[in-house]
Image (cartoon, rainbow, N blue to C red):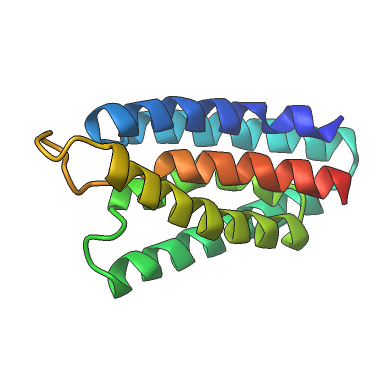
Length: 155
C-alpha cells in the first residue's frame, strides 16, 4: 500500500489549506516540517521496495513542479503568491512518488479544480471582508492531489 506513504504530505497540505483559507498565509516552518517528514516517508518507501530511483524521481518532479508554479506566478502577477509555490512542496513530494502520469493528472486536476474554486469563491465570499479578491489556492492543490492519486490508483 504505497499510498499510505503520502499521508504526511497530504496531512501537512490539509493544515496549510486551513491556514490559507483562514488568514491567507502559508507558514514556511509548516512547509519545511511537512516536506521533511514526507521526504523521510519517501525514503522509507524507497528502501522498503529497494528502488531508490523513487527518491530521485520524487525530488526532480517536485523541483520541476515548483519551477513551473513559480513561472506561472511571475507571468501573471498577483495571481499566485510565494506561499502557493512553497505549499506545493510537501504534496509534490507525495504525488511525485508515483511518476509522470500522476503528476500530469495532478496538474490537470489543479487547472480544472482551480477554475471551479475561483468561480465559487468569488461568488460566495463576502466583498466587505479584509481578504476580498484574494482566493486561497492551497486547498485546490490538496484536492487536485487527492484526485490525481485516486485516479492513478484506478487507472
